[in-house]
Length: 151
Image 1 (spheres, rainbow, N blue to C red):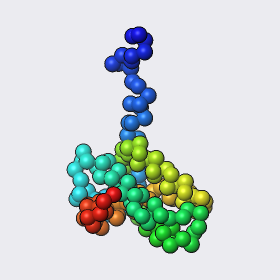
Image 2 (cartoon, helix red, strand yellow; image 1 turned 60 degrees about the vertical axis):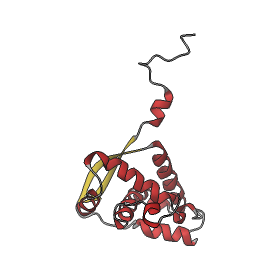
Image 3 (spheres, rainbow, N blue to C red; image 1 turned 45 degrees about the vertical axis):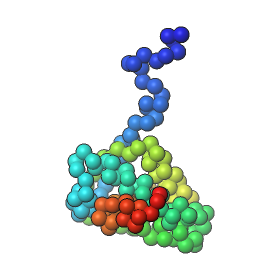
Image 4 (cartoon, one colour; image 1 turned 180 degrees about the vertical axis):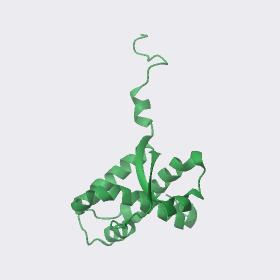
């Protein structure tokens, strides 16, 4: 019977799945300074994780038809991404994303890449930058907090 119970030193597969994942990011110095007003050094990854999850939970993304470029929600979401944005004073960093947020981000990249295959390498960074910008515009709040809506 003792063979079926993992010892405290053994890591279960569930523990490995729940671990946050390191994700490299590049943001302009101005965006980093603006965002840093809303989080502490220890809360940076959580703030970014919440911003990405919040952006991808909005109806603009959720209701988009990712098989039709001319769908109004698809067009609206794509307008947020600024795929052609040039980073002037880019600074590299790493954030930790929860498995759920990383899964949602990966799904979003896959959905958008189906419509815009030539932009594949720019999509994930653009989603992260858009999430950060949107949260800054909401004074560091999430959509539901700013507009009193249930998620």
